[in-house]
Every structure is written in C-alpha cells, then in structure tokens.
Length: 167
Image (cartoon, rainbow, N blue to C red; front, side, top):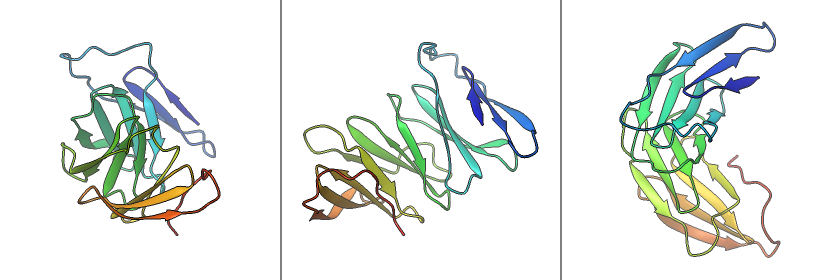
C-alpha cells in the first residue's frame, strides 16, 4: 500500500502493518502544483522509492536507510519513473523524451528525444541500466542509455506491444 501526500509519502508494509512517513523539504523557490498528485514508483527490487513531488525534481529514497539517496534535477514536467533492477539508473519518460540519471548524479547523464508522433506506450530498462527499449506501433527500438542513441529496430508486424521486458 502506498499513499502519497503533497511533498511526502507514507510507505506501509501490508504484512507487518508497519508504516513510515518519508518527508523531504521542497525547494521554496518552486511552487508546488497541488492539483497534481506526485509521481511515485518502487524500484524492481523494492529497495528504492522514486518520488516526483514537484514538477522540477525527483527524489530517490533508500528505504533501508530511510534517507534520500539522490535528488535529481533538470526535469520540467511530471513524468513516468522507472529504475533499473540494480538501482544504478533512473529513467523519466514524458511526451517528448526519456531522460536518464546515474546514481550519485544530480543532472541527467543522457536523454533521448522520441521520434515525431505520439510517445511510446511501452518502455523498458535493462536490469543493469545499460539499455532501454520501447515500442511504437509494432516497431521495437533498442537504445543505449549512456549515449542516448538507437542501437537498432525490429518490426514485429503485430501492432503495438502491451509490455516490454528484458530477461
């Protein structure tokens, strides 16, 4: 169970009933859009919590230490958040692009602008954060996170994918 308030979240363990409130001080220079709910995602391992409490920053919480591990900047829109399995890469996708941050870096390490048209509906990040993939209308594109470049494309001939995963 995960409940989110304006600039903090409540994380609850459904098995034990234990709960914790994660709070972060929001930069007073930026107004918080109270009409928008924060974007919140767990990492695949469940050890990190990604929170975009304001439009301009993303916080990476280490749930074991209950501390902010990284405070990410240079984002201007609310985005879908994703972390690699090992937690080394955080990705934020929006209508115009995907941005990537490496652990310990405040600013994006790379970005990739979507091709003309609607943004992809499915997106995946490899377990080690080295590769990303997305599908648009039956064409799966594989990219390099470090360079923000395309490695190749595969035409599936099956229409849009419902999901993508690295295995």
